[in-house]
Amino acid sequence: MGTTITEQELAEARKIWGDALVSVAKAFEDGGIDAARDAANAALDGAYGYNLGPVLFKPTLASGDQTFRPTRDGALAYFVGHSDDYPNDGGFGIKGWREVTSETFASFIQGDVAMWQGWVNCIDKDGNVTKVDKSWGYKKDDEGTLRIVLHHSSLPYQP
Image (cartoon, rainbow, N blue to C red; front, side, top):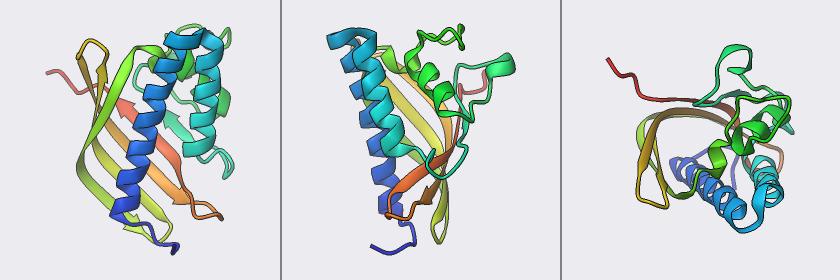
């Protein structure tokens, strides 16, 4: 495996992220908040680059002083809620997700850094779709694992 990121690796990274989101939702349903927290911690360790430094994380449903989340604790709170430090977080990851798909608008790859932009569709257990505008930045770590170092997400603009 080379250091240059490929389009296939970007697609695999999006699938890993989506599968992790579904696993958090199912863990919450099957085992409650502690199980969801365990699944979310595994997802953060597996997909994000906190081992490389701060992750530039702007989640979909965050605002005010907590709009941006450069720390792992801030990301964990966003995904599972139940945090005294982030009282407005409802837990995006525990909303009954069953499938995640993505639609690429564009990507940029230069060596071991890549950016991806497009739409992510999160489908819940009732078939409802939440479509978000998403940008991810990736860097390969020393082991050759693609890591999210930028995560920006927002709801589509409604004119």
